[in-house]
Each structure stands twice: as structure tokens, then as C-alpha cells.
Image (tube, rainbow, N blue to C red; front, side):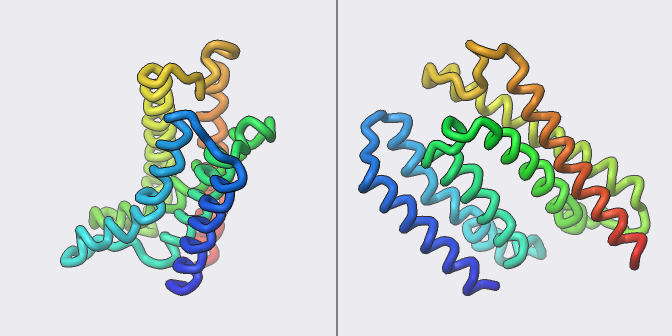
Length: 189
């Protein structure tokens, strides 16, 4: 899995470079977006190196899920313009973010020594609360970036709060999809 993750990282960075060569970007916010992709793709490895002497670790499977989500949301969505070219892409990535957030919640609970796979009700409630918290924090981040850079990623100028609410509902639906799988898997055991 480590080799697969390394290959994904190299291929996504090459894709970003090739995209930039054939689509030169001159605006400051797009250049910053391109440059920010490089450290963001290494966050799991940076995290693991910071906490290498602790029991907290992002394993290769979790890194794989992170990389796939990052490529879909950041590289294809933001850098390559998927959000503006495909009308449903934003909803799709928010749905994936809900699935991803719900997926990592048991890992977080394990790190906090609070995970009990027999306590399904607590785990499901925690998954929903973490997913909604991440969605709210993301929307706050989008709002702050819009205000600082004078952009309109939340489409407040055209849709008001509709985009923000749709994004959070899609994240919740993604979490519910994962929770259905999670509960089924736990009951099967």
C-alpha cells in the first residue's frame, strides 16, 4: 500500500505540473492554490513524523483514502476547475467528504482510547457530530477566504446560503451512507 500511495503522490504532482505547463495561470490566488497542493499532499506523512514516538499514526490505508479525496477535491476540483466545469462536482465532493470524515472517526476514537465497537449508538452519533463539525469548519474557512481574497467560492453573491446548506447536507448524507455500511459491517461481525 505504501508503494501505491507513493505512486499516487508522484502521479498527482506530475499531473499538477503538466496542467500548469499547458494552462498557465497568472492570478495570485490560483498560483497560491497550485503551490499549496504540494504541502497538503504530504500532511499524513508530516503528521506521522511529528507524532512518530506516539501511538497516533495515519496508516497506509487511511493515507490512501486521504490522497484519493485530495485528488478529487483539490486537484481535479479546485486546480483543474472541476467545480466550475461540472455543475454537480461540488455536491459530489461534499458527499465524499462526509464519507471520508465518517470513515476516519473510528480512528480518531481509537487514538483517544474511546473506541468500543460494541457501542454502535455512541459511534454513530460521534460520526455524525464530527462530520457536521468538519463541514461547518470548512464552510467557515471558505467564507474567510472569500472575505480575505474577495472571491465567491460559496456563491453567496448568487445563491445566498443555499450553497453552504447544500454542502453541509451533502456531507451529512455521505456520513449516513458510510454509517449504514459501518453498522452493517459491525452487525455482521
